[in-house]
Length: 409
Image 1 (cartoon, helix red, strand yellow):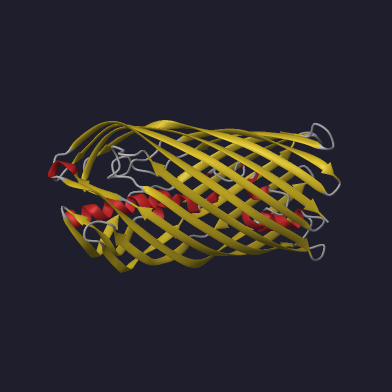
Image 2: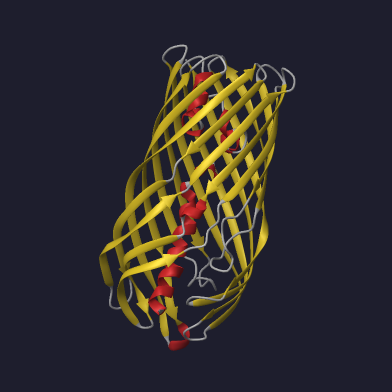
């Protein structure tokens, strides 16, 4: 039973770290990920809704970089259930996201447009030294690179369809800490590395009932990764497992957007997203090297249940063309939290506010910059099962910046 508890705690760290594989959760560009995700009118439609590629009038290349900083502070107490070791106080976690991406859109005919996107996501999370939640959370590093070819087809002047494939490669590095200070067993770290490649896809449509209205929908299916690698317990003695593997799913996502011009210069956009994180219900993990009391072991297999929820993300935004060269955009989003505070140190629901501006440097080059801040509700944590009993409050916020260059040919 105690080995099962260890598995649950260690793998919870992987699950919440791996949410970084979903770039649309607000870490990516405010322009595409927050405003009008399914009706973007440039080459980024390759990733967000390939049906919208048919809005392109000329070949286009977009280079984009986004960075985000995520800060959490847990205040409360933790108790090791096996030893009664008690810790109280606060602990901070710093997480950094880096999302470089490249998009290409090429109209082949008046009705057929091809696109290609290379989207990457680099994630690093660091804990305080001697954090009171070091036995429940861990430092993580995730790298994810997606290559997405897509096509958009205009069936008539009012209706377009599109589809894309998502070739994805992910690498996980999880470095949990185990220790039993009250039993004079010092902290030891494990290093769990795994990687895997998978394929997914998405479909979408775009409706243009009038010159001033766009309606878009995109469905991106879940991707199943078979992750394999090595697990090393860096204690005395060191133990290595070369059979460390598990199956992981990135969530399916449905996105619906409406873009309405109110005047030739002023418009409104609304977007609703449904993210199916509830797919992470039951995970089988194999071959992790860890420590049970003072004994290094390799746990061959465990069946770990999770309690994540499907969530909604709502956005309302506006844009205004100040001049023929300048445009400004503002938006606000409400983002539900998928976590369950009775099983993980999770975050509360978030309110995201942000803005962006675009400028036409010359006829063929445009630049866009954006900023978004997430105000996240405090989450009361009350974990009463497992190896560590945790109670307290988790406070969080996030900042994201993006810069985008568009080249028209």
